[in-house]
Amino acid sequence: MINSINFLLMVSCLSLVLISYQANAWGPVDPTIGFVSLPLNRSNLVVQRPYDVPEDQRYCFVNGTHKLWVYSTDKPHSLTSKTSPRTEIRVHGYDYSSGVWQFEGYGYLPCGTTGVCIMQVFGASPHATTLMLRVYNGSLTYYRASVIVPNIYDKWFKLNVIHDVDNSKVRVYIDGVLKSEAPGRGGTSHYFKFGVYAQNNDSYYMESRWKDIKVLKKCD
Image 1: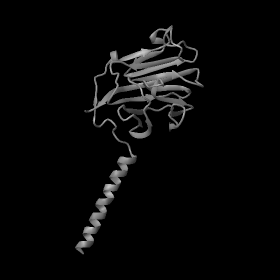
Image 2: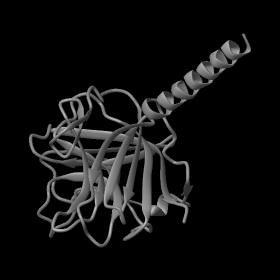
Image 3: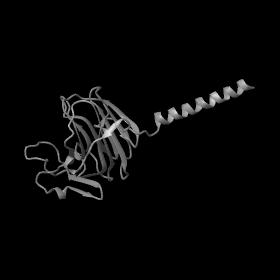
Image 4: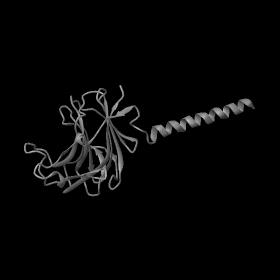
């Protein structure tokens, strides 16, 4: 009788362990555990916009939300640039070349914005970027390849991007769930950007909104 009870207790304990493992493996997690949030203020968030328009015609910050928009007919962000139109925030003061770094923020894409990059890990070799998160017809994609999240329009989502430079890995979490893991792409210096940057097959009007931006570094 005692052996039967012990066996049932053991099975129950194993079941709880399995359920806990499944929740951790497949459910939302906190990707920031083990990281330190670094000081960040408006001076760290540098707006890049078409060079021929005032900042307030492509960017505003209201009630804690950054709103960035651009048109497919806009100029580049500088006279010498040959790149496509963009209104992006470049995170300044936290360029990095080693270690494990993380971007966190809440994003929002209004319906109709497409053919656009909304977040970058800049710096690579021979490429320009280690990561581009783009939106095509309502789907969030890794560059123009795999779909990370379908139906991203008209709802807030939590984005965490972890760049492990030394092990050459990039992980993308949406709402605490790991959605993508990709290899690094080389390079000696990196930084984060977010906003709207026109890509191929872009819509005439592109917009994204962001709030609660953080930059974190893994504890040594």
